[in-house]
Amino acid sequence: MEEGSKKGPGKNVATLTWLDSQELARFVTETGKIQPRGDTGLSAKDQRRVTRLIKRARNMLTMK
Image (cartoon, rainbow, N blue to C red):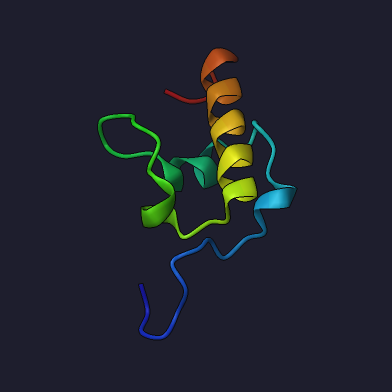
């Protein structure tokens, strides 16, 4: 990360869909676990949304 930048993503989380697997991959560890809110820097609402999208993408096999 650059100095002075927030932990959060550059793109607005509200615009993500389950098809954006490259963008959602930033919120998943190498072992496949969803990163906690403290690591992602998201609000609680955005973290819940990202979690739902990741689970949906896994279910639809667009993300591992």
